[in-house]
Image 1: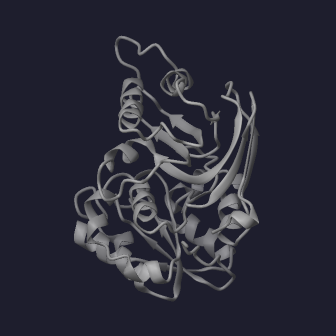
Image 2: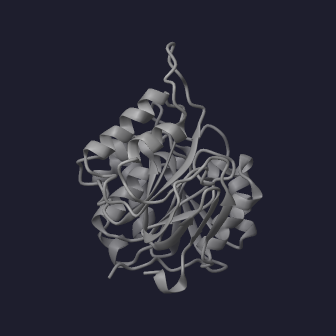
Length: 304
């Protein structure tokens, strides 16, 4: 049985590292926020490191992350930001101590590589949510969702979608993250088993045809066939070609999954958006999707 990391309590130490791009601005807002939650913040070496666009060499970023995983006093590890670089260092990390004594790993975007790697190899829950660099623009709701989830309160998502959903009810382990990164690790030792799962996807700055291509890649790889549900989060700052693609995100998703029979929830409040609510990857949730109403809960009995 997989082991859920202990939830945080006041006075705990939490670490901040940069496993991908370097941080160009200070993290004072995030540090002050974590302190207001009565957490003690420990900064990794990579927070102030720079090597090309990365927060240090692949080896340094792996070592910094490793030190946080191995330090028993650190109860959660925040990735300061995403960008690109996790795929370059993930194979340099030894997760054996983490497997024995798991702790919460938090982040989104490029951190999808870490989420996916942990789900594939260890099945230990991780957290998709706001990162230190996104705190200044984050909604109060999303930051509260991160705090509450880290401190052990079951997340509840209930909202009215702008777009018409594909209705249905299901239950399954939630997985996912950034679409480009899910495709990036396809076929590797960080590639998850999607069967029987509720998949969350989001992306930013891509061309419409690229989103279509990536979803077709997942479909042809058999990843979309046996899902229990699909959560379509923020797809923001998208670009179109000179000759318009001709379909919205919702239309192209519908077209690709039309042969399957599971609920699809559009406008899910997570991703590269200000209201990026926290999700627990690797835990069971119940999903109820109506035409414009979505409700997803993680139950006490379902926390593994």
